Each structure stands twice: as structure tokens, then as C-alpha cells.
Figure 1 (tube, rainbow, N blue to C red):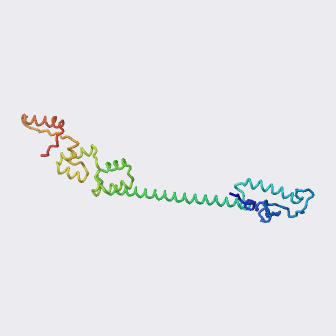
Figure 2 (cartoon, rainbow, N blue to C red):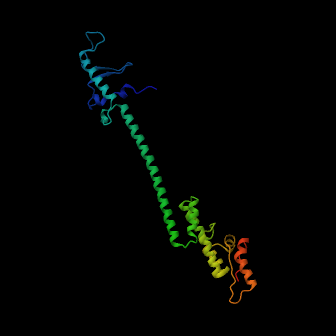
Figure 3 (cartoon, rainbow, N blue to C red):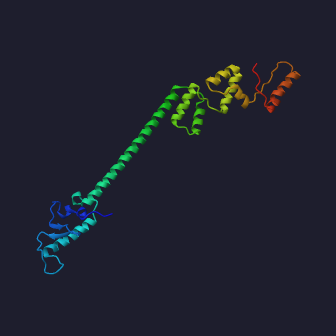
Length: 246
């Protein structure tokens, strides 16, 4: 690939001191451009040597060559060659494209952050305006699954509408269900299971053993003794079913 031409790389502005008029002439008709003095005599006393006027031009061009080959970053644009100006324009174009891309990435990042903030606000509104049963358990399960804030909000809303029922119960959930069962029987446990998402009677049967002792105010009969021994010792060992509430 051929490089830039002579006219593209020649620093006209530096050679003319910014006046756009060269102090010498340039002949570009041949394969190699030739520079000559405005006062060129057109003849020399020695073959292949410049005249006295052109001799001064040779030194000046050599000085221009050293400056053109070592262009400083702070050089004024009017002293640069056409090729240098093209390179500067390409550099600014590349920098402009990079800034545009950076602006688009920043805008996308800001939009994502604003969306996250809206999701957090929505989560706070859901928690502050609703009494969600088993909230801690729902959040624990969601975080273990790696759910996003939006997915957690959807899960909480489904829990409020009854479309989602978290699986698994903690020890506290089972203890509260047992307490409700002992105080109010099946009816109270059923109500708590639907309103507070406590374990059902079937779930308690699978996770807990109940002990029932028959009290007496008179002499203990053999039947009462056998019943209490069975409830205290034999039933837990045989994993018996829950006793009916009477």
C-alpha cells in the first residue's frame, strides 16, 4: 500500500511561517519533487551542485524534515501537514466514538440502577402495607434460590393471594401449631393454618409426637396406669398417630 504523497506530508504551514506562501518553489513534475530558490540562477559552476540561492534552500528543507519527523503533541494545527491533520481528525473521531459508547453504557447502567431502586421501593411498600404470613421463611427460601428483588415481590404478592404456599416449616412454626391445637383443637389450628400459614394437623402428625396423660383425683386404676404408660412410653416408640381431641 503506497504511503502519503509528498504534498500530503509536506508541512506547508511551517515552511511558510503560517503565511501560506513558500519562500521557495517546488517542482513536482518528476518522480522526485525538487525544491529551488526564488532567486535560482539556473546554472552552476560545478556539475550536480546547486547554485548559491538553492544551497540555502537545502539547509532550510533539512530543518523542516527534522521538525516534520518529530512532531510534538502541542504543535499548532497550522504547522502540521495534511497527513498529520488527517491523523488528528481520525484520533478525535475515535475518541468521540468511545465517548458515545461510554455514554450509552452509562445510560444503561443508570437505567438499571433506577429500576432496582423502584423494585426496592415496591418491596418496602409491600412489607409496610401487608401482614404477610411466614415472611421470614419466604424471604429465606427466595434468597437461597438467588431470586431477584422483582421475583421476591412477585412471590410475596402470590403469597397474599394464596397462589403461593412456602414449603417446609421451622421449629417455631411447629411449636405454634401445637400450641394452637392444644388450646383450641382442630378448629383453631385449621384457622391458623389458613390465616398464618401454620402447619396443618397432618403436618404435625408427620413431625411431632403427642403425649396425653389421663389425670385422676381418686385412686389410680390399672386401666389408667396402663393408658398413661402406653402414651408416655409405647406410643412415641411406635410412632403412633395423633390422638383425637376430645
